Length: 167
Ligand code: SF4
Ligand code: SF4
Image (cartoon, rainbow, N blue to C red; front, side, top):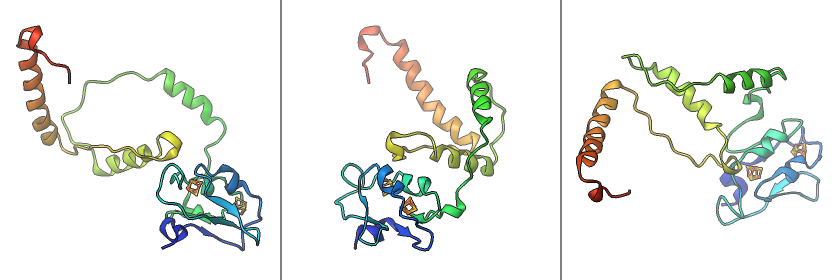
């Protein structure tokens, strides 16, 4: 199976204007313009270094929305935020505080999904998104998780300092 099939990389030739922006931005340098002037993907051994990074930059930069990859379609992409968002972002970062007081109730599953969706887009090396999250969706799970870990911590702290090992 060719890499274009593995990545589901597709170019809508009716939209492509041959600008080459997708080729120039390709993190893995796997794209080039073919003889007809449309982008094509070369074969590669594996994803990551020396292959496609899964960054989706090709889709993001295309000015005409001609590229789809990994079954992501440009028409389903969010539009860019308004320019004043920069000020809000600064305000958000500067007013951020730690919070360690929580309500005794489960978080709505829809809210968790929304947060996870946003976290998928968090910055990672080369947009590779090679990060895993563990979600405890119910208070009860969280309590069961905390009990053994806090008991273990207490037991370590009550031992003489010389017996505490670094992990
Ligand atoms: S996803 Fe990234 S690395 Fe893969 S073809 Fe597109 S721009 Fe290149
Ligand atoms: S960025 Fe879009 S329009 Fe430009 S060459 Fe690539 S597919 Fe074609």
